[in-house]
Image (cartoon, rainbow, N blue to C red; front, side, top):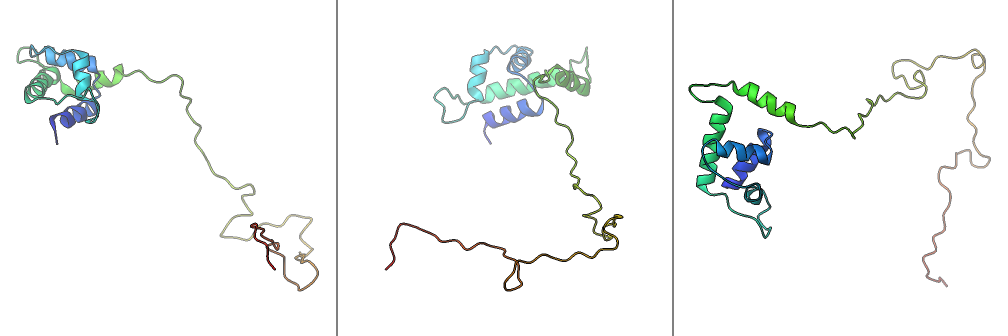
Length: 154
């Protein structure tokens, strides 16, 4: 695992934006621009990709400790800091919440597995006969299809 992978995973896990990472690095007096930071998060085959050095990662981790825990004189609760980060993430207003999908059959009694369907008043006395086409007494399931693939048969 490279330093770039570690930096990417920490950014995602802690829900940090690039400007927040720059601020964390400034806590330990390490100056870096957003564009330099963006080069660390690029794909390895990208022309502007840059390896994250040990010094950058070390300073980020030291700054992260100060950011989450605070200093000895001014301690912080890390869960409060992470909750604050989560609250700062803007919610998408354009996304419509989908109603919860509830699958129900058209006729709920018809598809019950435990009992036979209830009989309505009109069909109580009558027994249903299956309608078969005339001929051999079997229903026609599939029609006969003639394939024409362009070859002439003799």
